[in-house]
Length: 114
Length: 109
Image 1: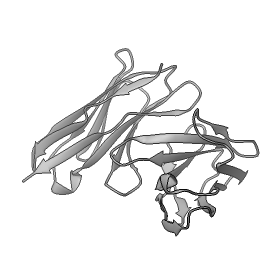
Image 2: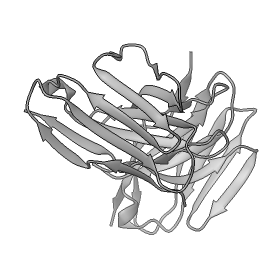
Image 3: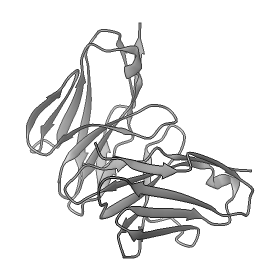
Image 4: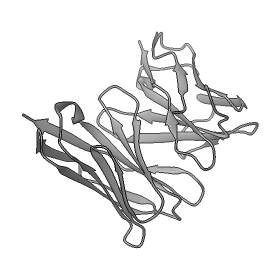
């Protein structure tokens, strides 16, 4: 099946610094990529949707300037958590798909801000 | 609004059968997915239904009724490793994935 690679799988950073998470579709062209955040014991919360070559569409309540999303090519999207704070600690997951396919998920990134 | 309902938690016995239901109300419908998620891991794909009926894939089967806004995931011959959360997700008319909160399945020996 299709593979989506997310990197890093775990990251610990100091409060106030920025962290970049990469999401790559390895064997297909992802016209759309999604970024999710998952809180403990809760479902996935969609943060934003990005289409290749255009600006990301953010869900209500998600700060655009804090969670920067770039989808520069059909195989790569990045999420940058800027000026991270402990409350940003969470599990971040990307998924990628073409219009008519299922969503393939990355492995997820466990972010811990200390 | 858009809404997907599934039970919060279910318990079943090893070797038995369990059915996890999902009902949805969304703006449009372009397919329904079931995903399995173990704690601390990303979801993994189980099934995709876009037409009414039953899709069988080994020990797992998924059923869809679009007129009723209803789906279920059937797990047979349960194994301990099936203990996980099972997420129902619907693609709406804008091709957005709408997620249910997930059903935590506990398997007992």
